[in-house]
Length: 82
Image (tube, rainbow, N blue to C red; front, side, top):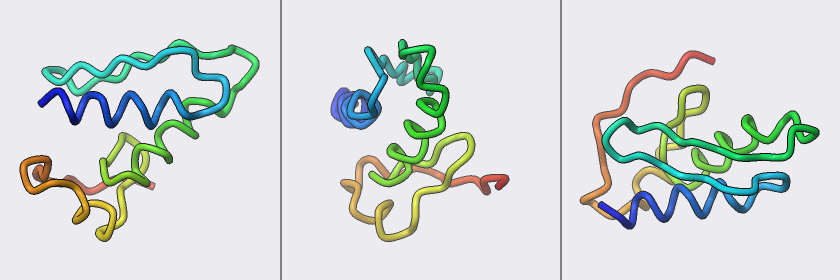
């Protein structure tokens, strides 16, 4: 699903200090290249991705954002430790 990849990469790239973002659909890993002086970049990226409906390692998307995803993009959600 290339559109999921593009949505996640676009959200990550919108964060100040992020130079590139590549999401691997098979492993569900996001590889970031970011300004080392922007220490909160990784956390900000996770919050941004959660805000568009995708759970991350540290942040759960709220139910309203998740429900706005296309039906084909829904997935089995796991509890996020916070």
